[in-house]
Image (cartoon, rainbow, N blue to C red; front, side):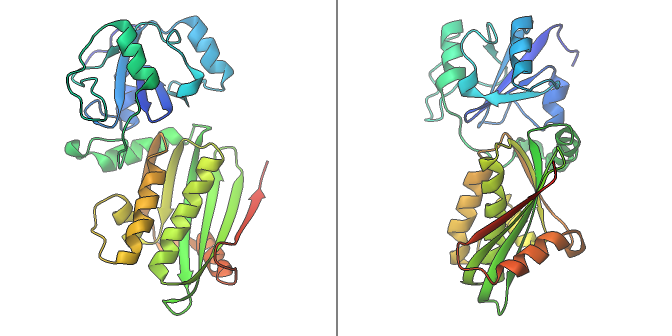
Length: 284
């Protein structure tokens, strides 16, 4: 499809708004207008004032992301819902089709958006492609980070620990470890991924790529494997709630040889009390 001149797209997820300059940018971010958890709007001629304002927030790339609280009805000018999406509320009300600019701005500024497992439409079955492109895009985004996680249990169940490594785009690295108490290895793995995601949110990261050597955790967080162990249900729920707070999220399974730093932190955390956290920042 040929791009329309001066068109731009505003994507709202939760309290985060993303601004993209082309349909190609949307596709490369793994965003689908069919995703029911997103609101996608089209505008024309992003004003110079808006460009300057976004730049003042440190957003100078083709794809921006900003808190919804930092914009108002006049920031983007007139917006229309991007077809074929319908501007329905998350409460299931499908009768709201008022096309007036005021109503559209109210939807953008006030209506909350639901959650999604990925920033992609599962019906399109392009998750792997979206992850590959998103990885490239995240590499130049100052609000992105990589989180490596691992868990350890001496006895399974036994004294357990969780370790996570957060790698920021500016070169900073944060090493985290948390005591888990007496637990299984799978519980420790979940505690590790939760530890890393919580810390990334605390530090203001909006785009995250998570990786660990627990295929079980990776597949269950994606919703691709069922949860057979009852003691993992609440942990899985917490992990999914955390990932839905990011503007974009992906999680990948890696081999143990690629996860040695998180593994070392998890084994170090075995000696900590349950809930005790240690952190160590390295870099600029």
